[in-house]
Each structure stands twice: as C-alpha cells, then as structure tokens.
Image (cartoon, rainbow, N blue to C red; front, side):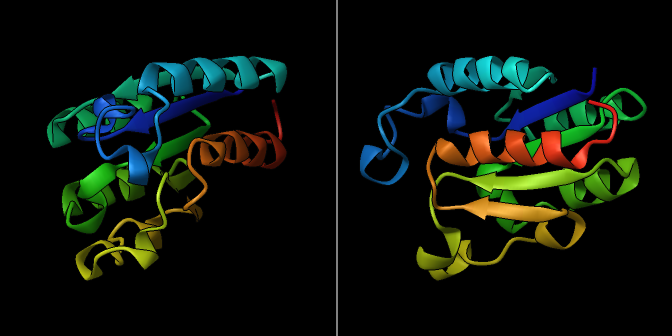
Length: 146
C-alpha cells in the first residue's frame, strides 16, 4: 500500500478559528479525518502532520525519505520564503503536491509567489478543504503501486 504524507505548516492548527472568511470554518482535525477516510477508500496509507515550526517540517520531510511515495503539503506562510523547505523537498525527491486553501495568486502581493512551486509536481490553490481531496485523487492516480 502506497504511503502518503500530508503536511500542514504554521497556523493551520487554527483553521476554523483564524479568518474564517478566507480559510472557512472547518477545523484541521475535521479536514484530517476526511483525508484519512478518503485515503483509506483510495487504498492509500495516509499520515497527517502539522507543525508551526519550519525545522520540524524539514525533519518530517527528511524522515519521509525511502518511506513515503507521495506528499501533499500546505506550507502556509512558509510557502513564500522557506528555502529550507524547498531544499528538503528537492533533496528527498518524493513527488510533492502543494496545497493551499485560499487562492494565493488572488491575495496580497507577497502571497502570490511560492518558492516551493518549482520543486513540486503541481499546486492546488483556492478550493478550500476540497483541495486536499483532489490531492489524494492525484496521488492515487499517479502512484503505480497503490
């Protein structure tokens, strides 16, 4: 069974509380449960992890090397400046799909650019929690040994 790691970065633990007009009212715990349920139906072994700390996310990416076949990653604000995460994604060589709840291109100018996008296989942005489900569908379709 293919293993998929779902990473969430800073402040995503405050989903449902933080700016509900931008990020919605669904909590991260609710999203993660839906991810686990959908992953199971798709025949994927899914692990979810959230941290407010860049280094913990780098550690999790490095730990995934040789163990995980696909990564869904919502790096939050780290999207726009974390060269450390970019380097970790590139180093592990695991197909990574960048996920954003809001449409980062339609928000403040500083949010429009992702330094991670060039090392990811794609990006889903602006579809709320549905983006994670679409990411799982992509993983299931792209992984040869699910």
